[in-house]
Image (cartoon, rainbow, N blue to C red; front, side, top):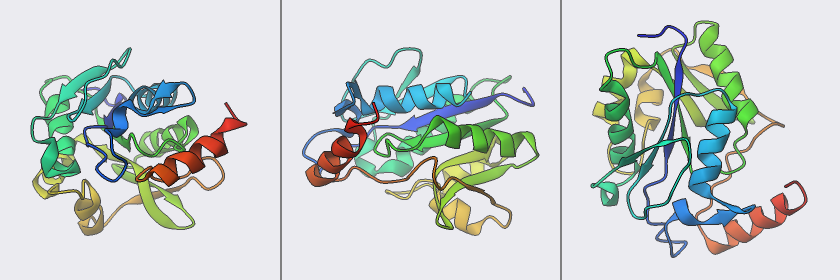
Length: 198
């Protein structure tokens, strides 16, 4: 197992019920949210990058697609599917940065900061905004079984993070934001926000 390799895992399997279409295929700034999220993980230094899809299929260059047949059960099953795919390699990555496709304001710099925390010895780390723990998160390989066991429904890694005694908090104020795209209004607001910056 590599002591320095950090993989990237983008969860993009949901149907976007409140939005009316799967978030993975929503376009923002000329690219789908799935492509955008994978690109940011790569730009942050993660390799390999895996994208978990379910409700919709879409091409994501330079990423490995993992299909989650149980995507209707929520984000927890997508996190489990992605970690299981990474865990299958005997010489796999030492850690993974997990990000969500519907948080397009997460930046490559936030990913780099998590990787820097890992290089300094962090085994569990999370981006914070105004002191609140959000995404993305970094999970050392030895914690993946516990994360999988606790990832149920639509909560992902949250139960594990709340139960773990030593989460390294990585402030990302000013370089990223964890705004979700859940509704058409959210999408319109983020498109307007990004219009001048892309």
